[in-house]
Length: 188
Image 1 (cartoon, rainbow, N blue to C red):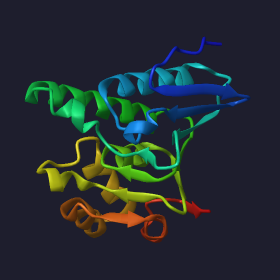
Image 2 (image 1 turned 120 degrees about the vertical axis):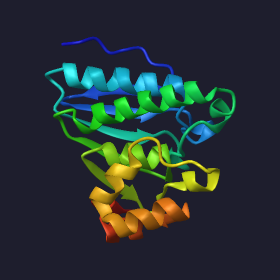
Image 3 (image 1 turned 45 degrees about the horizontal axis):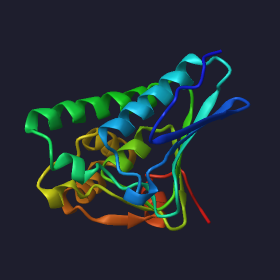
Image 4 (image 1 turned 30 degrees about the vertical axis):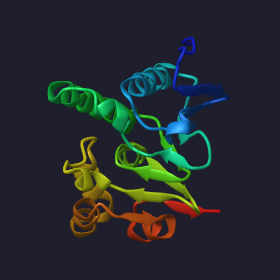
């Protein structure tokens, strides 16, 4: 059995056969910065390597956000080359989650926007709290979804709905996300 990694921005605990992974940056709505991506990778590599773990639950700390997207304050300070490298790193982490070989449940509370929505889509199953909001608002910033949203979203909801969400930059609530097949379940 592997030892539990020490993480700065992610809470990680194992209870029985389940690993609990919680993004722990509630003051910035659990925004994804480079350190958080590194912590997520370490946690999910441990889930992969620990044969006693049969599945994982991923969520965000606090009540306002699952993950509200990329940490814009970090993005504002990096070069285009660094941004591409960071995006590729995030994609690799989400590919690890998607291809883990063990089920990963996204327990979506609050906002799941941009990279947060993409993180949820990389999970095996998505369960949304009644107040959850989903969206790919990158178009409003003049960029496209960089964490696999252009690929995963059409597979989940169909090309037309995916294009509407991506190109409009709009948000949908949990009930609409359930109706279109983005989440498996919406609960109170």
